[in-house]
Length: 68
Image 1 (tube, rainbow, N blue to C red):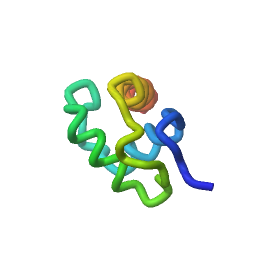
Image 2 (image 1 turned 60 degrees about the vertical axis):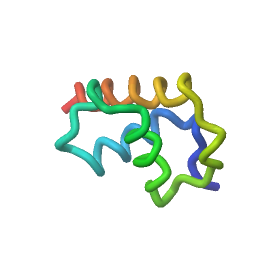
Image 3 (image 1 turned 90 degrees about the horizontal axis):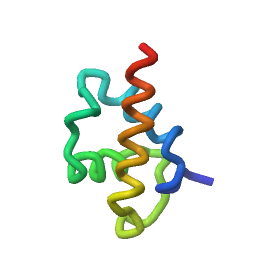
């Protein structure tokens, strides 16, 4: 079973690994949406995302980036 929009922590880890040069604090939601859809393990419908879900992913990515 693949990743869904509400799997923010797992998505954030993959985004951090896939885009290590990006500061997630400055990512536009349009770019974030596209990058999530590009994750091989992601299997949810594109239109099911929303601002709250994208914000949760961005916050998890910011936390993930602070770990390194």
